[in-house]
Length: 219
Length: 79
Image 1 (tube, chains in turn blue, red):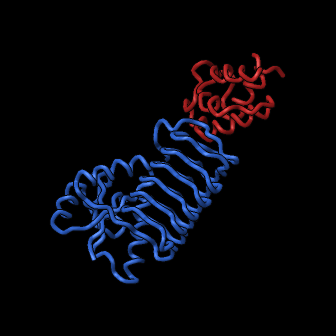
Image 2 (tube, rainbow over the protein chains, first blue to last red):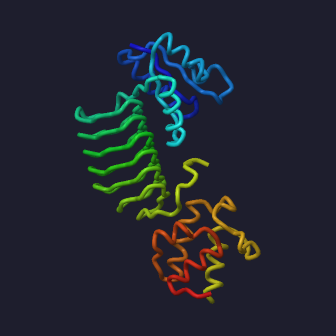
């Protein structure tokens, strides 16, 4: 057992804290669970102590532990991951007990899987991938680092999703497709064709609409 | 209805602006309504109105009210 830090104490951070608490009730994995947040002005959030980054780094150097990054912006996840790498603060993973993860799936460090997901056979996640509730990741799918998959997304088998991308709520991805790096797929989009790097694709059928210049999902 | 009137009416309807706002400075993200979702709706409306299917590059490069007219020119839409 070891301590866990949830980096970012916002809404997604609270969701991850819920997953952690439920998981710990089944059989403790983490001795202590804290937040790291440099923006929220309080020392307590959602029942958890909030550390500033430098405080957390010092604490972890003394006591050990690992970190998961609970932020829905791929670019922010990447920036935080690089910060943690520089501070030698290892990534951990948090997987909800109600999710099904195939034994053959290879999940990189920093994986977050929310409730009621299905992660199928031979799936490969690079590090720092987040999968939100009720999402289905079909067989043999590869997902690149820092990518965020929102809730109720269904990805057909053999798809390749790039790095730093965001798949919006309820998106449907036909099997065998390649979705590039730093792509935003809009909520409810139905993707029938490959999507190149650095675009925003929306609609049914999904079409690239704009370049993803700002690398920002949320307004 | 002329092509210009069709074009203008689509912009006004999609983005909730008056004709007086449609000038060379009217561009993507100049108002909240012209975000990526608004852009998609506008493109779909233009395609429907003019009976065309725009190429991806043209959709992505359609950055403003005047640029849009240039892009439509590629599809034989004159103003």
